[in-house]
Image (cartoon, rainbow, N blue to C red; front, side, top):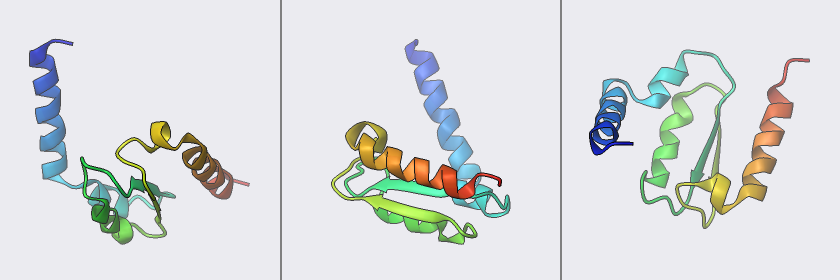
Length: 92
């Protein structure tokens, strides 16, 4: 990846989030939502997980001692949560 494409991607991502935050985008979709945040995330404030309370029936999980990459830092807990969510929300 070139430097120019890296910076362009970052700028586009920031513009997307400034236009309309993810919780706002999800709130009206009526889809099952699982939000995973690490309590030690240094990229996003872990308290910002509470912004997802506006999403109807969103399930919010804060993983203790985990940073920005729960799937790498605590794959067992992350996998268990994802599996449980998939089973709970699968059409019957």
